[in-house]
Each structure stands twice: as C-alpha cells, then as structure tokens.
Image (tube, rainbow over the protein chains, first blue to last red):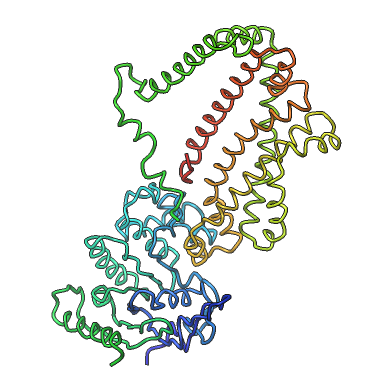
Length: 259
Length: 276
C-alpha cells in the first residue's frame, strides 16, 4: 500500500448565486488520490472545471464541501509546498530579470542575494535557459517564458507542481519539445506533478495516470486510466494509439449521452 | 484587456534607428520634420498676424521676441517663470507623494476603498479653482494657497490612475506570489507596487499637465507674480505681446518638463513597462 499524497475527498465547489443567477455547481463530489512522485494528468474538455480543481488544490479557492489534504495535512490557502505553473505568461513578473523571477520564492524566504542567484542559475540551467539571466520576460519567446515559470516553481523546492495547461499557448513544435523536457525534469527532480490539459495526445505522452473528467457543470472524475507505456514515449510507440482511442471513446461516449 | 507592457517589445531606439539617416550623423529625418513643423507654425503666425490684425491685437512673432528679450534682460521674465515653476513642482510632488500611496491602499484594501471612494468620486468633479476663495481665506494669499490648489489637482489624477493600475494587475501574478510564499504584505511590496508603477508614472505625467493649467488660473486670481499673473495683468495694459510671452513660456516649460520626466522614466523605470 503506497502512502497517500494529495487526496481530494468529495470536493464540491460552486460559484455564489448572483441576482437572477442560480448558484452554479462547477465541481461536485470530486475525489482523487495521488501517489507521491507520480505524473498525473487531468484531462477534460474546455470549461469542464479542470482549472477549478487545480485552483482548489492550489488553495486559491476553498471547497464548499469535502476535504483536500497533502501528505495528511489539510490544504488551507496557497502554500510553498504546491506551486503553480500558469497557462499565461502574465504570471511572470515583467519588471524583474529572468534570474530574479526564478529567485522570487527564495527572496520571499529571506535567502541572501548571492545564495538565491546561485540556486536560480542551477534551475535556469535545468530548463536550458543558460545565458538568459539578465533578460526581462518581455524579451523571451513563449516557450522560454514557460521555462522560466517551471524554473521559478522548482527553485522553491515544492512537494508538488500544479500545471494549468502550461503549453496550451505554444506552437506545436515548441510544445513537443517542452513536453519531452518536462518529462526529463520530472525524472531528475522526482516531483509529483498534476498537469491539466484538454489534449489527449499530450496526456498520453506525459502521464503515469490520466484522470478523465466529465463534462461540466458538476464535474467529477469519470475514470482513471493508467498509462503503462515505456518512456520516452512517442506518438508512434507501440500501444500509444490504443490508449488514445480508449480515452477518446470514453469522452465521445459521454458526448452522445453516456455509455 | 491586454497588459500595459507590450511597449517593451520593440524599444523606441529600435524604431528610430530604422528611419533613414542623413549625412549629418545624429540628426535624423524625424528631427528635421519636427523642426520644420515648428518653423512652419511661426511663419503661419507671422503671416496671419501681419495680414489681418494690428500688432496690439495679435502681435507678430518678431515683436513678441523683442519684448521677450527686454523682459529677460530686466529679469522680469525669469522671476515669473521661476515662481510658477516652483509652485508647480512643489504642488505636483506633494500631491503625487500623497496620492500614490493612497491609491495603492485604496486599490488593494476593499475597506479602505469603501471609506474613501465617496470623497474621491465627489471631489474629483469639483475643480480646484472653485476652492480658491475658501483656500485663500483659510491659508492666506501666500504660497501655501497656490501650492495647495495644485496639490488638490494632482491628487485626483494620480490617485485614480493608481487605483486603475492596481485593478489591472493580472490575478495570476498575485496568485504566483502567494504560492511562492509571499505574505500579503510582501505581495503588496514586491508585486502590487512594481506592477502599478507605470500607472502611477502615467498619472503623474497627466497631473503635471494639469498643474500648468491650474497654476495659471490660481495666479490670475490671487497672486502678484508668476506666469498667470503676467498674462492676466498684461490684459489691463492691452500688452498682448506680454500675454504671448506668457503663452509661449507655458507651452515651452510644459513641453520641457514633460520631456524631462519622460527621459527619467525611460532611463530609470523602463523595466516596469511605462506607457510612453
């Protein structure tokens, strides 16, 4: 029996009622249990409530009912043990050099400038951004900005990474490269990753397990599909197509009104 | 709403360097157009003034120039310019120093906004000039009154711009800071403040312009020095040439201080993505 890591138990979330608008139940009785060190993809169509689930895990939102715990500790508000990589580049601090963006979390902890720059350089090296230390985010490409975000959360040495469609805005080529680099980084650091995507291919390429969500509102997990394919994976790997079809069928079945 | 930082994407220097350069080196085509445009306006002024008006109704540029030289030699002009500039800068700086922190607090803390927003929304529609008489009764006819009037003008512009700036901060920035371990106070200092800086600076530039307008009004009504006084007092003697001196000085001073302010922003605050 593997020890439970991040656990969501019967978590619900709804947007408050406004005048003339019924309260919308975005997530309803959502349960999942993650294992430490695993790469977990949360897969679902746009608007199904994936990001709400991630925001609940991050502590940005408070569940209306249910319970979230990390290593047995209840999640109350944002914490350095669960850092988030956002989809948009608007999460970077555009007035800070790359290196100071990466060192931001260390600065918040009061670590001296020399020390945090040394650590930040290591993580910039990890994401292949050597030599970009003294550029501003506005001077970097979309892929490089997402690398900065990844380096920034890793530099804080969190227990896990929450990634909200981090490659969604990138071109196909860059996205492919970022996907394989992320797997490398995951291998090197051993962090638990929750990765949100609406792209089945991306989920099959990356995940140990894929949590397929139902269509919103009242989203919950429909199924958890383990992906046992050997790494590094390619679209042409044996078994890739079958897994893809299996998940696709699951999603399509729901669209025509259930299995 | 997009962010206010795309100004960074292409720096102004890149844009200028692509325009054709002339043999004279640092002089660029845009500079020459700029200069020609100024000369063109002066020529137009001369033609209209000499064709349609008597000099005492619309003084031509050369008359204004010679009056200006006389006033410079007698020291009269610099006295007016100096005192007006002093009032503007004092009021502008004091007003900004009050408004920027106030706007940051009002933008970040809902309770503070709820308390002060009614005052801001009410008084921003009351022009500073409406306060001139009460202010003179309360604070006398001295410098304090004039500086206060400019402080009042500056406060609302800088305050509202700052509040808008705070509300424009991408929520992801504050969330990122929170999960990287920033306390609310640290998030305010390290995210809200720098992210709002371009809006504060823009508010200050706008307020600077309004300070020029306000100082003139204040000096017209309650002063015995300054460019507003010069313009208003010259009316009594039908000295239109002196009025034009005042007008030209105001425009030139405004332009110069704005250019200077812009230079300071680009030199020291370019990474914050100021609106140029």
